[in-house]
Length: 386
Image (cartoon, rainbow, N blue to C red; front, side):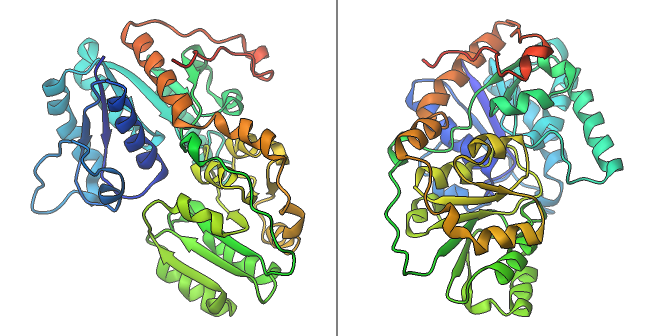
């Protein structure tokens, strides 16, 4: 079995981080797992690609960062011909247009394609016209005979009809099992330490978080933000305008932010939309309490519909109230319950299930799901872990 994974670059992102960790884990299991990069730039190269073999094409003088999708469509066919994979692994929703181009390019000679859906499918954050176009694109994708991977059972009910005939649930392998730990006891006399992790980009809606923090947090409470991105300067300006510069620390991108979470009390997530955000899983594994906006079915499922963390409306007043009453979230669910819940999202659990999925896809085996009436009951089969 040869599985080819392709990424635009090593730029930080949840999809890219998980893909690199999977490639490394598959190789440790003895699987041929070539990796193709459109370009080599990005912080994840030093963080996750140390001694990880990959190929990347020579870059044109004008660079490729601003047209990375057309560049990938142009260069990936040569890599497919060179490596002759059994399966092309599409590690996130942003790469589906590349997969569609490969299917059109190679036709019946195209390797089996397995696509991981990494974003919320409903996208209630979009205006009506944009949401219609988004759903239309999903229906177009559903016409391709691909195997779809969804990262949580809760997402299945949002799948377009065409996708319901060929999907598997493989929980997002966000952590290693060794990282699951019991929460540290918190001293009530100390100010709470809030933390956020993610790219400083519109999807994460950090302006909402900053305004809610300024409105709801006490004067001695702090917020540390790990991550970088195009919105950083604007966010630092907003923090100054809100008078919270001294209490908000923009750390920037750091290697393995998850390893730093145990020094905090509560993780904040203010996203407009999410698939199954790895940072929530990392926070639960580290023993933090969580406050998140209601940004998708995956968020609700990871947080057990509020059992493992607070879920609030994507509204400044609601998020500020949750922050003001953060002590209500300071006692997470019992560790035994939380541990079993989080174990679903370990790479030890998911890597083998992915391989079973690849084998079935390469053999052309259709994956049959239950009738739509059963989907609300979460009663579809999940392939066994190896």
